Length: 144
Length: 411
Figure 1 (spheres, helix red, strand yellow):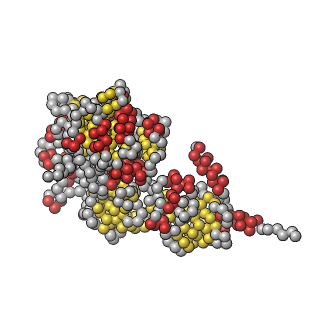
Figure 2: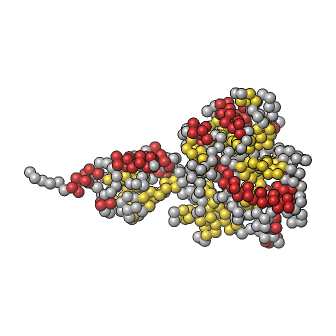
């Protein structure tokens, strides 16, 4: 049989297994149905930030454009905005971080997830880095 | 512009690196912000529970001496230099003429009385050039009015500046006691806050050169600041670290230093104080001693502005239009530059320093607010990331100080 699988469908099933990264050190992981993305900050960012003492979480139902500030992560010395890689609507936030912001340091890419967005435009996922591309990106930044 | 390659290094630079320090530019020096063994928060806690050693060799140390030294210091600062006994020190401020604005905050300590009148002056690294220009100009004007001679000298030997380190924490006294040279007979328990003594420490090579040590510091904890002959800065630091051991004493950097001083309600020049702030606005009226508060004869720079500020308008003075206050902020930390609003939402001031307090687990800040809104308990707001957050005016220090004033002997 000559069934061609559409590239978009292949891409989606591929990306639902792995995290994608932004140049601002956020990660996003798609749900298996591709409709929502879970967002957090990378291990690299969490290490650079030091002890997280406060996390500003977004309100549920907030509509955001790709690149908008989703919230903020604060250390003793500084605050960093977290930008959403994708446009969409906030559907869930990790309330654990209100009580225990240090969860981000313990598990930045796991239990330290920050918010979940219902994705408005899958195309926003294009141009994000894979884990290995992100690793090269951070190593290059260190070397400068 | 200074680049990383132009930054100064204190004598402890290599020692910092060997302890895994992360270095940052500060006051035109390469200074440690933290070390690999402790996060900033952990280092902060260590200082309050045990003892930390800070390199503050970037700060500027002077000797001011001569028959005119006392009167000179009384002209450029509000200090009661004549009343300081040998070994007694005080916080003060170099002041601009007429406006009484603060050029820099400083510590002035009398080391010797007449006829030499030797004073020890420590000022901020960030104001190095500005302060030196200010002092030289003031001395130039001083000589021209035929006053007794005054000399100003940077503390250095063979071109190397004296080292300056700070030992801070509840274990500082014990560590100091155990590190003294056997020839040094100083009773630590009767060495009170604000007093400087000449001490010697035990080095592997024998008794150290004399060190001028002042009981006090920038953290609110008991502690000592040690002014060390340049040939022994490293040896003295290592002797303290080795004598105390890793379980009692750790190196600490600027990261912890900033959160500690903020908890202690202490100002950072360039943030909480600047050329436009008078001591009265800054809540530092106490640096003007009672006997220097009359307009007749007093004559310190800016007295004509500062002294009327000490009396409210209602009582015939000028009062001040803004005051430095402490704030405890709900939700997100309020940092420098954040606007302070009253309960109705009108902007009435600005935050000058702020951070999450590791000890209190609350957000603390210093801000200047409109006079009248400065009383403890006043409910204000701060604007952080576009959202208003509750802020309550709080008395400082936020964390109670533990300055050594003799303790209480059980009866």
